[in-house]
Length: 96
Image (cartoon, rainbow, N blue to C red; front, top):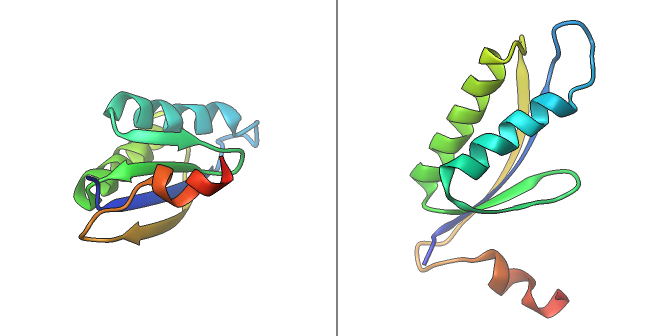
């Protein structure tokens, strides 16, 4: 069982003030390619896994956005860590 939930909202600056959604899509693509369990929400994406693995995905997201031309990125991150295990499904099952 995973020991960490990490929710991230990326706020990329765009080179010429254009729409940031294509950049956000690139960040989500990094998550999808990573293979970690995740859920895309309206304002953030939550990932489930081991803390080191999830922080590596965050690093890769930032690198991908810089490579795409973003001059800077702000990320708002929330981390829930429980060495005994934690899951999105368990935390939200009563609402589904």
